[in-house]
Amino acid sequence: MELIYEKSKPGDRASTLPQYDLPAAEVPEDLRRAEPPRLPELAEPEVVRHFTELSTRNFGIDTGFYPLGSCTMKHNPRVNERVVMLPGFKDLHPHQDEDGAQGALELMWRLQEILKEVAGLDACSLQPAAGSQGELTGLMLMRAYFEDIGEGDQRDTIVTADTAHGTNPASVTMAGYKLEKVATDARGNLDLDDLRSKVNERTAGLMLTNPSTLGLFDEHIEDVAKIFHDAGSLLYYDGANLNAVCGISRPGDMGFDIVHINLHKTFSQPHGGGGPGGGPIVVREKLEPFLPVPAVVRDGDGFRLDHDRPKSIGKVRGFTGPFGVFVRSYAYIRSYGPGLKEMSEVAVLNANYLLAKLRDAYDLPYDRLCMHEFVLSARSLKRDHGVTALDVAKRLMDYGYHPPTIYFPLVVPEALMIEPTETEPKERLDGFIDAMLAIAREAAEDPSLLLDAPRSQPVSRLDEVKAAKRAVVKYGFEEHPDLSGEVGEGRQLEAQKGA
Ligand SMILES: Cc1ncc(COP(=O)(O)O)c(C=O)c1O
Image (cartoon, rainbow, N blue to C red; front, side, top):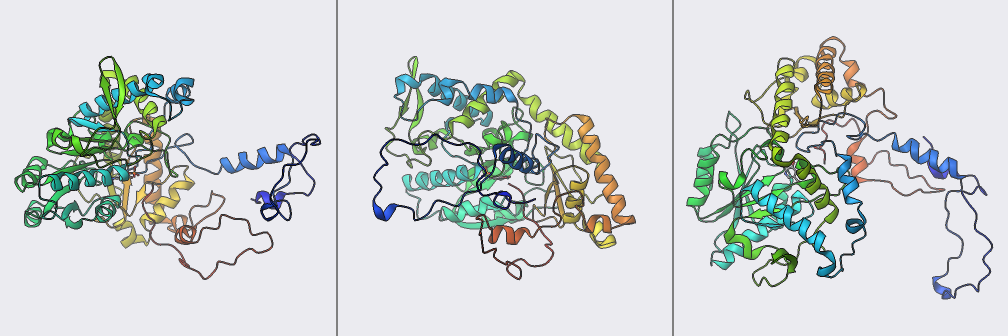
């Protein structure tokens, strides 16, 4: 497809403006352009066609099944968009005084109350803008708490699982803590012996997602919590996988002290490609004084922002956080009403249905009932037929499906991590099952179908490493840089996990 600059024809215009007959504005000589900017010149229909054609090259939850494990790509009900576009929400200025923003403050307060109930904890801040920012905020809370009780210098280590999402170790390092990784046992739980040997008086806390990124609920979660609490440490719950247990089991009841909730996953939100997201944190009472300011509080019949929190870690995000995300999540939760747990029940049912149908065609590293997602392996396909998880993922695109997450978690070789979510009907799941089974057969009968995939897309195998490290996003006019021979040459063998 041609770039818009390549379609440009000198003199073509989308529209013209009448002759300007007012005095020209005085622009200082050194700020004046020597020549007009080089913009593409096209008639309006051509501009519309160009961008419409580009938009059809994208894949989204609105165009098809998107089983990207750990990312919870669920349908975003349109009623959310309707509500977020109400003028009182859409046009509200962040500097509006509190009296003129009572509705928005009430919505935030109500959302906080719901998240406290869902997490089984006592206080909430909506500020963090993503799960990863929630993690960093939670670790800052731990530091503030231990400094407050005089153990700030003593506690310098955070424990994570070897299945942890990449943001966990990254947040730990950014927060200035040392990282200790714990192994996974044969059933996919934290290895308790390994864990015991790594928790001591230097441990500030655990950061864990439950169910894990293997889609498995830790069978010893109460023992795990006891080990940390006995050592005087705190437990942080990475709530990215809350879609499995929402309304059924609560992180606070499992023993966790701090939880982040990925609003943009569990409570729907058009996400991916960089946003928008929301990662509120919910904490036990003893951590409340350290939460970010301002806090959204109820004051009699009204609502206000409380800045008077002397022990607060301060602000982690502009104003009160990503407000549009709050409105959508609130609408999503309220439209389920008291039946919210049905969301997680169906998510788990859908995942187990897929697992039951696919388990004989692929390797299943942990043979247990799964939660909202599960991890298969293409290890036998690689050994017997020379095709990898990446090849399976690319071939799925020819069948019209977004690939699952691959090569994550790292403890499973040739991992295929599949999360259908609750918003898919059985017919879609059956179509995906047929495609996965057909691909496993093709691997045995004609591996080239996988090795050359995708064939149906405008481009086939992309060098994703080079695309990330050497993104060319500016049109070069005369110069078109020759990037061959730079980083990432050759066929890419492993792709990174999705957003
Ligand atoms: C298990 C887990 N933890 C944390 C995160 C980070 O969340 P966010 O993408 O909102 O920063 C993700 C995102 O995929 C995740 O899957």
